[in-house]
Image (cartoon, rainbow, N blue to C red; front, top):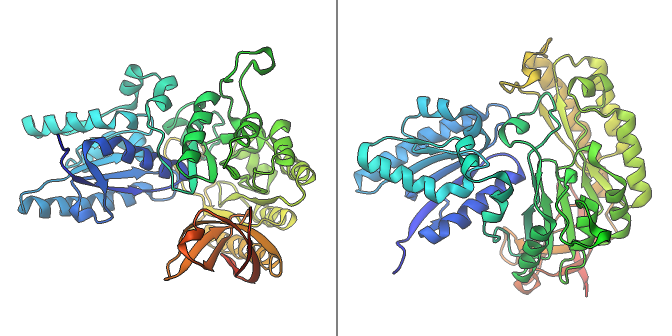
Length: 464
């Protein structure tokens, strides 16, 4: 029997984990006849996969829900319909409020329940057909039926781009930074068994992946069950050990991981940066502030000195390594001296990239009750200073590649005809005039120009 063709619209907010989760949802719904559409007005089902971390997350979701409601009303005029769903961290944290403010939403689910999506959808359809009721699925109810340990294993292992794949190995966080909702929306740290990770990685490579990025809210806190029972491999594997094993997969030429916490950067992982050529020399290591006072208020449990010592160890292990980071600007109690300390840290490390954001109050987090809150005027002023400084450092790093030969993995089509796009080992985008047969190939490119966001040059050879 042929499954009727239906269109699915997914809008993804926030982190790379959410991008990964959206792909998983698509995999789960394909057997039900859904195919992706980028036009929400044509969708039989629309899912907003939300993030609760960035400023005004809820307002953006409600605004988008209003547009989806209008699309559904238009579809009904032509005899069609649309299911509307909210998933992700806003769904987890604000589920009852979403149903109250937007009663036309059919289902709400958290990030630990999307593996039950086909079942929840069918329940929503039945309830609508019988009484027009809406369905709100609580994470706790789902976890009662499906323990966390089984969550990853229920999912199909097919979410990846053909060349650069994402592989989720860890979820949740136990750090309880005072600004962060992840421990409340994603739960305690859980690591997939190493055997399951290795099997999925091999499958991704069989389907054409040349690069795998390992994902987790606190990915270097990975502690997965070892795949072997011999005495030399007893106990859980850390990320360093996992990376070493992944590097043995034929055809896998690049390994990355994100996002890390400085407290979990152990010696085994540092040694992996030294010993595993496939592990890229580019590390996203969020610090959040250059002020010890702010780091203590954030409950980061590391100091600036601790962080700089880590940077030094990593550079000693891999001299060509480069770093990116995250910075929160205007955290409660931040003074001008704290702000200047952050600029000093950026100057000392010399980041290749960095991301900075104004602090935004997240309900239920300890920081939301801290005083004094920094004014918006000061936040904006200091954020502009930090971003300008980061852009200078990023441009300087990129310009330092002019005249060098960089290894570039060609992983996608460019925006222009006859153009392909690739990434250097340092995540710099490189547009190249080349034929499509180079997709998936590693090429050497002589860099001729650089901007703050990309490099450009010409191919000098293919890498064997």
